[in-house]
Length: 320
Image (cartoon, rainbow, N blue to C red; front, side, top):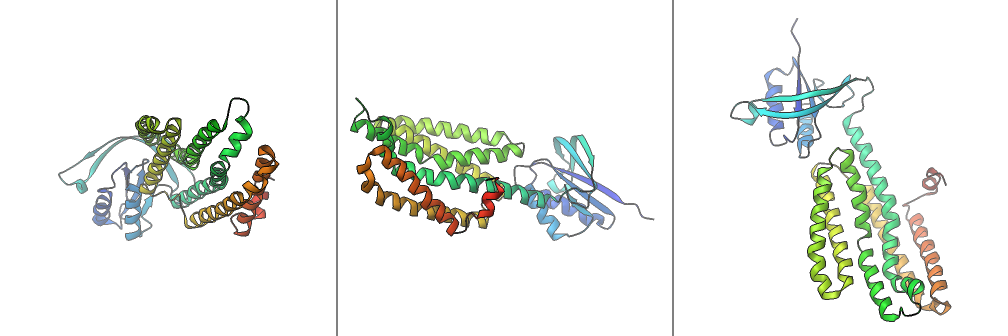
């Protein structure tokens, strides 16, 4: 009776050579060898390389962390990877510590876990952007009316209203970015990666300061508002690119289509507000503002329902 060999491969940021290492192990004697691959939250393309190997050498002997054929999960702390030999594919000595050992017959497939994870992130983004995109458009279109209704009394005149309204527009442009940063940073935190959001926040802060000084000298306080929004968008874009690099799909096809519909409904609402604002201003700034908000909400959400972004079942599922 031949002996079976079980090989556990610990991985951390080894995307450059993990494929060749696994191929070497598998080609030695794949009929007598079972491989368990344990990924320790790699931040490079290790995961995609592992799945490329599994796809090429489909076998029940090859198991990635969390597949439902496995009866256990090891939670490990990885200390070091020491390369043996001159070639990275010649082998590695793994120094680590098994923190927890779980036995569970109902372990989920990691692909299903990631799919569910991506769906949750997409739903959070969809719901948040559904509210913040029209809010951004409303702040831009109704900025002067809002400031006039709230502040333009006594010594606060037309010039002050213009400055504050322009500043409000500058900050409003960054609203979607602030929401993206909040949600996408949480994605990194859930992956036990607090370093990446911190680095990107530092980059955004430096960018904000670097832009604020010249823009303030050129256009006053308005420049600070635009510098803040630009740095926020830079932060959000870096988070999106990083998630794409580690193979987390936050912009699935259905989500992208829904975003296009949300933007379309927002554009329709914006045209209605622009067309209506001068005609009802005679009622006074406060009454006009209230009516415009009601009209904008009705037009926007009607557009969402007509385009199928949200259905009645979606509202009832939220408990309303």
